[in-house]
Length: 287
Image (cartoon, rainbow, N blue to C red):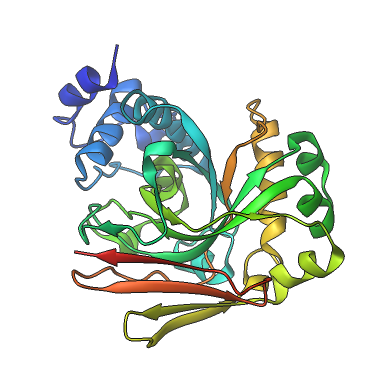
């Protein structure tokens, strides 16, 4: 049954009585989550405690429903790769979400500030996979870099999706597909796999500025698992362990270099990656 039919009925579900019993969410419960995501409404919260296994099992069901609306996946995102973000969501390990092609827009795009139920923005980085097996086996940033075709500046536009994001923890974050909503991708830069470039990803300074040039936040590349290339390898191994290995051409969002910032109507945001060749940048405007 298509998500549009199941999700419409599931919007009436406002509680999850079985989730407190350490069980995978039912199809109807997952459909309710997917319906709220598609409708850009706050996702209904479970009635009791939900384990991480429950959250990830629910995520897999939610993603299947989302695919019936958004189309084929184009890649994946690594969430909670930054210690500051892990602390905010009380979970000390990365989480995986799925990206759909319809979520991605080009550099300079203009979007509504209310693109989600609880929209936020963050500086990120997008890479394209060239050799999935080599990336899965990579034990160093340079080995991971050699398995990539290109990298792109990327402003992720996640959605925290719940009524009270301050109470959002790891299991619920997993179930809402790690908040995947949209993202702005800059021009792809072909990879030249050298030790210097691999080191530059960790050493770079990522700066988020507004339209007037005021700095909103800065972060180091090393804040993302020591080197964001490590996040690409983590995604490859996590997907392989789940029985859904990466494919050549998959896009990977590597995680946050900045704090989560709220978009505002009339706001322009630019992200610059100082230390990567050419200091690439990407921008977005909100209406």
